[in-house]
Length: 261
Image 1: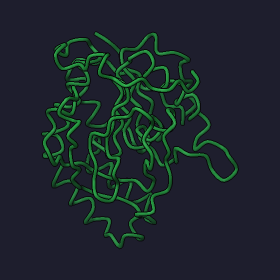
Image 2: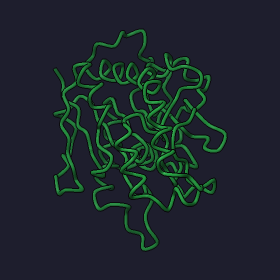
Image 3: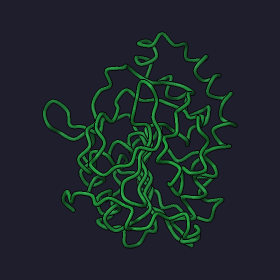
Image 4: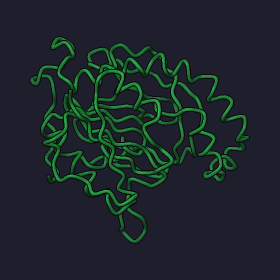
């Protein structure tokens, strides 16, 4: 049995359904909450995987040059170590954006405006050879809630999913690190909480809060159908039980630039 390190950046965005899927697949989870003062480890030596969740913060510094949260530099350091040492890694929404910025990608406030509620993303051709995305359907259901976007992927990143307004919806770095712009962990209660705390984004789009919650609830079964097996395959990779044929050979992975520790 292996343990995955889970970094919860915001109490409003916990593991929720993703945590259930991972534990059902045999992966033990150690959750650290730096927003509550929990210290982050300096290394990943005691863990078989790294998962970085979303949050209301931005992955880029503010006008004064301060990081979106005081612990973000340490999170980015762990993300770099994970990629360098081939530790299976999953970044969700903000977590995916931090995976990008940790490796030289660019995250900015989206000029397309917020993206909120259920939606579809389009799987790219490169997903055919990806150990997790190869079994994802062409147009998988997802849940969106973000105002920032990844405008430039890191050098060497492989684009796995896109949409017309937000071209970088999912990507892989190296052979074992994935970033998702969208959410797969949400349930209806989580979305209801976000409608209460992020009314400005709803107002900008002219959305009704109850309608967003209802629409999300309607697609949760479809989201689970796609992303529960995805989570199970991530757990299998972390636990060393994913078939070797599904893991990209090192010779097919482009070398990533070294950006600190």
